[in-house]
Length: 563
Ligand SMILES: [Zn+2]
View 1 (cartoon, helix red, strand yellow):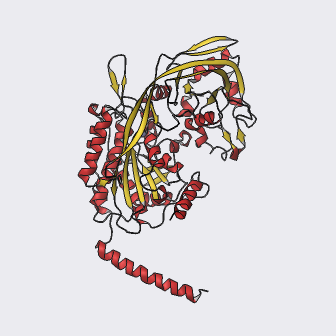
View 2: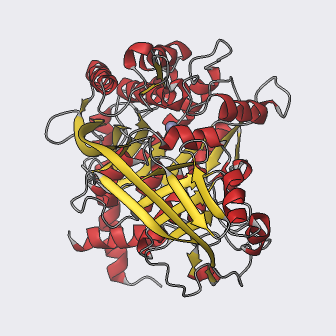
View 3: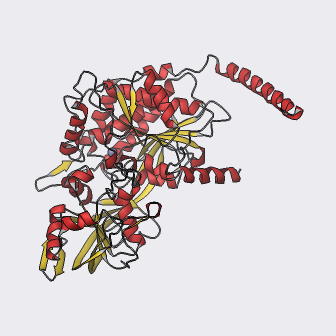
């Protein structure tokens, strides 16, 4: 039974609520409606942005280049033109992101010596290597150890190192997480963070290894060697941290699986047999009896890059200090010198398309008669292609508290192939955003599906991950796979074709078969999902068992304590 005191308190709150609703109703006029925003999307408007951003003039939008100047200017002008306020409380549309560009001299020579002789490995053909240390020269001359998958996962009682001291050694590790049969271990077919290359390099550094090479595998990586070669052999950026990244291993890199076989032969070992042996709890690291010698000379340059941000203040005094973030990376790989002339990495799909969606979402929100209750941030981040650096910088130096950030919605390469009867939600099942996305999709007559390629670890591969790592619930939508009027396999076939032919290549340009009607449909979905999150007084939450739930709870506790 309710105590009288509770009844009294209840009726007091009821009165406050009534008064509030009346006032809210007065100040807003008609009930809030997202329709004006929904209607504003068009394929032409999206295409116009993509055409500009992926043009030769924008030079592939490399951080720190003339392409950055043009891109940042374009985004600022668009936000200003739309009528959105600068998102940085300092009154500007930019957040400065201090980066350092590290360009390894391609004349590097990896020499591997063992009983079976000496092996000279060719840069780019057999391996790529780099150092994230901000130094002019980094070198290794050390014993090589095969460390299986290079994973220590206490929750699965998995330890590839078994107490071996690998300090000062050069590790050779396999790509992805161990493909054990048990669905409950390492997410079954789905990739966990243990499968990401970032994890492997972080682990090598933590154990004090001198170097770490990951053996590439096209099937398991989901992308061919050319992608590794293109992504890792030019200038790479990192955040300019105070310790100059001296905590990282001296040298990091990749080798092809063919070359791994040759290296293991030189050691008198069978690569395929050891690869099999590594899929076991009993696996112990195997010293290869080889020495790897490599010196990398770097050209260093500081690069002042920028995130671009605009804000639409919320309409509810109680909720306007809480935020929903739409994020898209504006950067791509810029230009690379070739034997003849230079090539522009246009990045039309990746990610001129997502940036276009960001701008059109901003326009849609500005069309609303009344903004949603929470504030909306439109964040175009830099250096995603270099390891999610711009989003990581924002998440580590947020302009608005992350504990007050309700959710992040990421747009990285949107659908350019026409309407779909479904939408893919990466990381589905991990937060209450599932229900919001499902209800919006249902209204569109579409189905929501989980990742059709869970083995590729997409959740860890774009900017929302920088936020999720800090606890913010994230929606990472991908294009659907069932295209209206197309055979069932067509969508995945086209996706495969893009990955093989254009992903991270200069040929990622607007194609004559593009059809942005599906992009419009998806933008409407992104719009409504963000809108509903911004209207609902309850914040989205991670579901029990989700990887980032603990982080969110501690972040909310800290914010609560500081109030
Ligand atoms: Zn991208």
